[in-house]
Image (tube, rainbow, N blue to C red; front, side, top):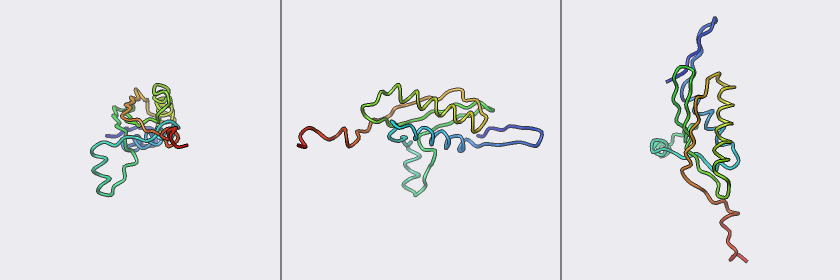
Length: 126
């Protein structure tokens, strides 16, 4: 799918992949997001040597209305609702600025938690 905008000079088409890549990059840039989770298709593609820059993001487009689902892995010790809200705001704002699309919803699915090295060092390391 793609979104299409028509103006007096012609038309502009943006693929679902472009929107997904922008959303993926913005979500991954939030400090407390450890990574974006891969789907089964992403994992299979990676084994074949293909890199998916839109990993962890599913995009639905209806005209210029966009709905995004982001599967992420959070860093242990952070407040998950705060991480989710930060990702939602950043993705929505950036997509609307960069693409001109209306972001109807940004759904966040926290699929895992990662412990950083700092959190995994026990008091027995004395």
